[in-house]
Amino acid sequence: MDQAKVMFSIVSLLVAATFAALYIYIFSLHTEVNGTKVGGNDYLVSAASFPAEYKHEEDFVADFHAYYNRTTGYGMIDRPLDLEAQERQATAAVAYIDVFLENGVAHEDLKKDLLSIKELSSQPLTTTEVRALHRYFHDLDKALNNYDHEDTFGVTETYGDQ
Image 1 (spheres, rainbow, N blue to C red):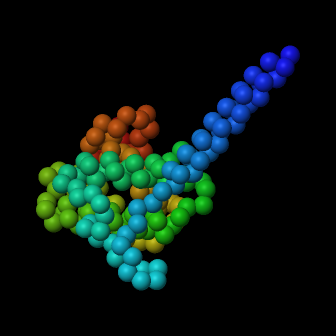
Image 2 (cartoon, one colour; image 1 turned 30 degrees about the vertical axis):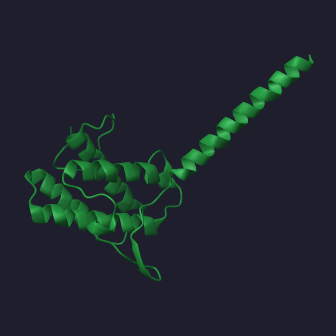
Image 3 (cartoon, helix red, strand yellow; image 1 turned 90 degrees about the vertical axis):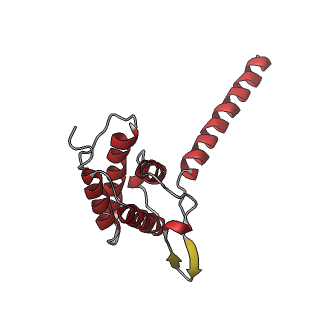
């Protein structure tokens, strides 16, 4: 009987440790990309202030979609959002989009989508705008990178209502 109690205790500890690790992992996903701090609460955000330099729109879309998955996906959008971090991310998106537009975007539909993201990112963000940005990057990731997910939101020109 003592052996059963020891085994039960070990299994209980393993289950508790697994749930604790899962809890820590889920909340560690709520990371953010920080701009270069200038002073106070002001941030200077440009494409150059972020670690990645994107030569292709596809890479930009994949990374930004991954950010939105980490910070708003899987039900996290229903929790209190760090809107300052979301604003910095949106400002970074505008900076990258400006570079892409300046260099020329080959596909007209993608250009329209990038302009829509830029417009949405340029206004004060609420949960509604953040959700819309996530959906734009989700559908673009499906269209440009063959992101494998069953949901499509039909918000982009590039992917359409497929």
